[in-house]
Length: 346
Image (cartoon, rainbow, N blue to C red):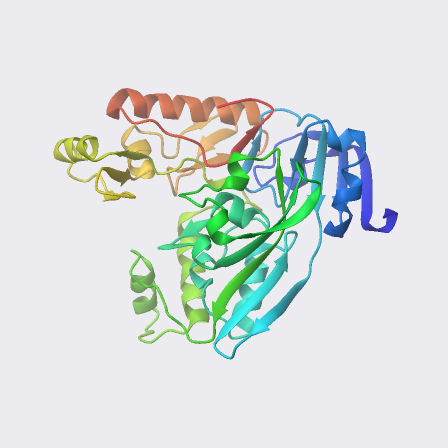
């Protein structure tokens, strides 16, 4: 048990969140073997108090110190658990860095995750947020999620259909006090079925003179597009897109499109809803490139809040609230943050 754990009191978290804001954990517990979680949660400190599961820190904002215990899953195992020739099932521990995992699959000739290259974070965070990019959501590739059930004190296997996946959402995100994702199994293929219809990817491949791309070439194109639009968190603190694209009633979307011809409008989940571009709405309100002290909005992308070095999480949250209020006032559209806010509420 002890060899599978590392404990640290008053642990600094600045290097563990991509915004690079100051925060401290009263107790940090790093777990290298998820099998010890049932025994670990018999301890009253974890059983009865708040527990924040921290992966790569790329989808949260520390607006204050997290209460209770911070738990970090550090398992790094990746392995093939089933191989039918074309269809391959791959299992990865929650602690594996996401982009490294995508590169591992491509290096083993497996297609399916190439559009999701260069997304920051860990494998364990992928199903929680149902990460998506360039026309693909991770739920399309997930077969099973292994998660520790704090209610039942056991590790359970949940089929994708039982994960309640939705746009940037899942049962794990809606029930953070119950579930701790420990590993994910992905159904991938040796026969590429490439998704190139999303704006930007086909153009980038054409610029590179690639007519019949491989999955690795698609991933490389995705990386180039992402790097051209999004700042590198290692250089400029950020958590990627801060706001979700809002889902609105179809009649509101149509009314806004009549008033603003350039507003991008996308299909919703059904005929009664539409998805709007949060970036366009924010840019139209004049926020792109805005800066207040060290808290600001990226000059490259209006969806990305950035820390120029010394911003606090509270300052970034206050800026995000002002942005959302301006969009609500001008367009009548509510914005919601993608990252989880810790130490405060939205």
